[in-house]
Structure formats: C-alpha cells, structure tokens
Image (cartoon, rainbow, N blue to C red):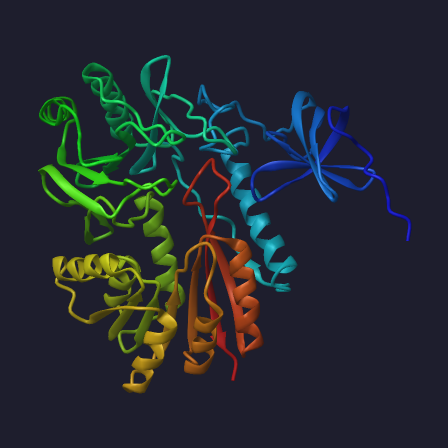
Length: 458
C-alpha cells in the first residue's frame, strides 16, 4: 500500500474552513484529509493559518487572520486571554459553549463507549459565568528583578503576570496583588525551578463564598519565610475577612504544588463554606469544589438519579472530604464512604460531625478492597455512587460493582472519555445507561462534568 505524503509542511500558510472543535477547544480543519488543529478558531469560520508542526496523522497551525467569523464568536473580556493558558474558549459565546460541551459528550460516548440513542441533556450552565472560582493556585516568578504572579502560558512554564482573573473571585485577585507587593517590598525572592533556589513557589487563595472567610497559603521551598511578621501584619491589614494565614513547605524538585508539611502562621487551621445547607471545613490542602454554585447543581442531579426514599444503603466510592456522601445521607438510610487519602477521610469525618450527620461511615483505603470487605460484613448497597479522578475508575472497582449488583449506579465524571470507557464496561456487565446530564462547572474552559445513571437490567 502506497504511503500518502503529508499534504502540508511546517511554515506553510493557507486558508481553511474550520469543521469542528476538539475537547481541548481547538478548531479542526482538514487539508486533503489531513487534520490540522487551530487554537482560537471556531467551527464554520474561514481562516488564514500558518502550519507550526506536523506529525504523521495530524498537525498544528497558528491562526493568522479570520476571513469569515462565526456568529458565535465573542470578544474575550480578559486582556491577557491570548497569552494565558487558564481559559481556552472565552472567544466562544457562553450559549455556544454549553451547546458545544453537550455535543462533545454525545460524540465521546458514541465514539469511545459505543453508546448510541441515549439522552444527553442540554448542559446546565450558569446565569453569570464569571468570577465563580473560590480558589486560586498561582505560581510565583520574577521578571526584571520584580516578583510576578499569574498562570502559565499554554503548553509552557512561562508565567503570564496578571492583576486580575475574570473567572476568579475578586478577593482572590486582591490576595495575589497584595502578596506581590509585599514580596517586592520586603525582598522575598521567588522560587527558581531551574536552579532550585529562592523562597516563594506558589500563593494559594481560598474564599468561602457564603461565609466570606478567606485563607492565604504561602508555598515555600524551605521553612524560612523572610519578614514573616511584616508579611502577616500586612496581609491582615489589606485582606478583608482573612481568617487563616498558612505556610506549606515543599522542598522537592517537582511541579506538584504542595509539600507534606503545613503550618498555621496566624488564625485558624480551617475556613468554612456551605454547599446548600451543608457546612464544610476547608484546610489548606482540602479538596473542595472550586465552583460551589454549580457543585450544588451537580450534587442535586446525582441525588435525583440516586432516587433515594430513605430506605437505601448507599456506597460513595472516591468520597473525598464527604461532599456527596453528606448530601446522600440526608435522604438515605445509611451511607458508606471510602477514599484512599487519609487526610480527606479525616476531613469527611469532621464535616459529618460539623453537620450532626450520624448515618454515615467513612473508611480509608482502596474502594475495590474496602467494598468487598463491607460486602462480607453483610452490607448490601442499593446504590453505588462513583466520582473518580480524571483517569476514571480502576477496572478492579468496576468488577467489584458488577459483583455487588446494586440496583443503580450514579457516575459523576470530570472526563467524558473515561466516563464513556467505564460505562461501556458496566453495560457489558449487565447495566444500562439511562441518561447523562452535563453540568458546566468551569465556564470558558474546555472542561465539562457529567452525571450518568445506570440501572441493573436483570
């Protein structure tokens, strides 16, 4: 069979029509059957591009000029949108973002999961899709001898200095600005990841949207934090509602943000916030959803799909700090939560106690090992809820679900591709996916959360 040559080469300039949008938010063009990915281009647009890289089956191009713009194109309000890698689709109108995300879920379920003729509901979006994030994790660097802070340029480790981020709560923006000013005032040096020297690696800002409580976390290379007293004093003077100032120490050569040691410099170890009527204690390293408004929408959907009457036993695998577990416990007979991270389970127990919820038990360990042990103790789950990380469920856990045969499985997913793969596995084991509800937790980014419900067919 004759090998077809690649029809374009690096630095070629050409005009193309954009046919689709990838799950990463890039436009898709075809040149004699060869796929080119064009960031910032939208379906239906006629654009001039420059090829920047070619691989065997696909290539990448840079958008030069738009000849015919999409009716859904929007003017990004963020002044650094074209440099910063934090958002991917501000240039697409919000209504079109919701439609695109629904289409993405449908396409992936069919392509990877082989799941056709299933209801994928319209994406549940926000009335105001700005300023929704309650946590900022911002790397610190230096430029021209001054400390800068901002998110990385897309596909790089170059920090784009910023004064505000339009998807962050305003208080988080203020924290980052204040910390930059204080660091420059007192000569606190930024961490240099290449030379592994300097002090300040990241600043993490956390905001309780309902309580207004604020936490500031300094992630440092070593235990030494120069001018600590002045730093604390100026943070307290300049940041309203600050309740907690914390130092986390990360001495390793790594791109992981947090180290193992965390010390409270001033105030409380926790701030608090609510999702619905449930109160949560949030520490520096606690996992807590960054968009609490849409988290409530997501969890309400999971509750609806669980169809609880008050008589059911529920297992919540990957339970984290107990967020879904505590919602389920309000309507279930009993909930069992399991999570591999010990600190998360400690938080989950604390949150149950904080809310006076007693019909829930939490265990540390791998769900695929703890769940069979519970089964051996006579615990029979009517509903199993899973909310795995982006890599999806371990196959061993899926096998465990099939062996336990709950009437319903509610799958909360942050990755449509692994959701499709896992639904296919469960369907092969006797379950039927009834419907899927996308929820937009991260407007203006390419991410989409989903809730799917499966029922046992025999």
